[in-house]
Amino acid sequence: MGELEVSPGLFGMLVIIEANPGLKQTELAHAAQLDRSSLVPALDKLEARRLVARRASGEDRRVNGLWLTPEGAVLLKQLKRRVARHEDRLVRGLTAAERETLAALLQRILPERR
Image 1 (cartoon, rainbow, N blue to C red):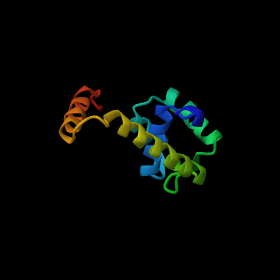
Image 2 (image 1 turned 90 degrees about the vertical axis):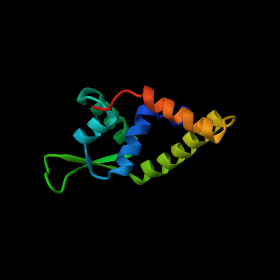
Image 3 (image 1 turned 135 degrees about the vertical axis):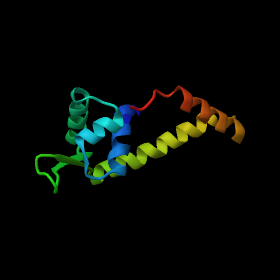
Image 4 (image 1 turned 90 degrees about the horizontal axis):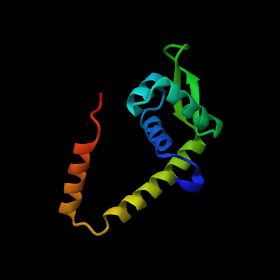
């Protein structure tokens, strides 16, 4: 996402965190299909940019929960608009039926979730 300096992977992490405030790092790793060695540096980037905050869980202070910061929420809103415009451009010439077929075909080639 160009000048906003957000990779597709970081975008996906922001979307997951927004949908699951307080999500544990291990849960994010599972949802994003990342191992700890990939997750921690990515979270460090998001935290350094003040897009995500790590806070001790209310249930277990040894565990960090993840929250979007107000800055993160603003940026994610911008990113979602960009993604929607891009997706609209991609399928502009397709009929509704063709869009459904494309979506079904893409679902078939996605790697299986474990």
